[in-house]
Length: 153
Image (cartoon, rainbow, N blue to C red; front, side, top):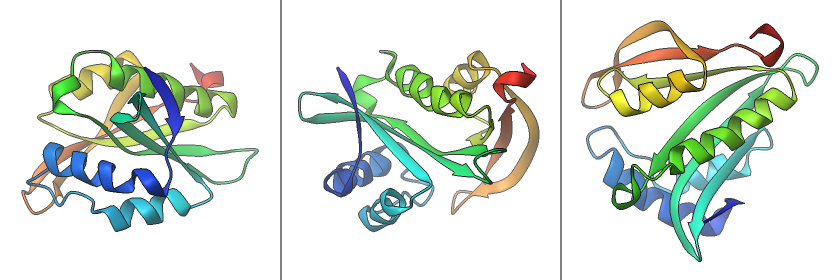
């Protein structure tokens, strides 16, 4: 397994995984990933087995470099490769980026996604709010979670 930066050539596979993972909630198409990858403040990483993309995740840096905050845009693991630590591996890398600049991190997660919530809590995320009908078109609710900056933990 290897972690690599994602770029335009990986957008179609990310969209394919989105369709598998989030069919009820407006999965991102290839073009959205292309736009996301092009943004200078975004970083997308993938876990690869050879040339096969098994998991992906993206983080965005917001605010000035001297006082940044970060937002996890998405994270997903191929259903055939879940429960192997791939999501945790991606989170370690994404959180290292935020910790390096001492920024707090925010994300949204479905209130029924117990596995993801448990993983985020293991990375010191705490629920700070709930967004009703956040995911569309399903109308599923989401928790907003926050991880304090390294200097505040």
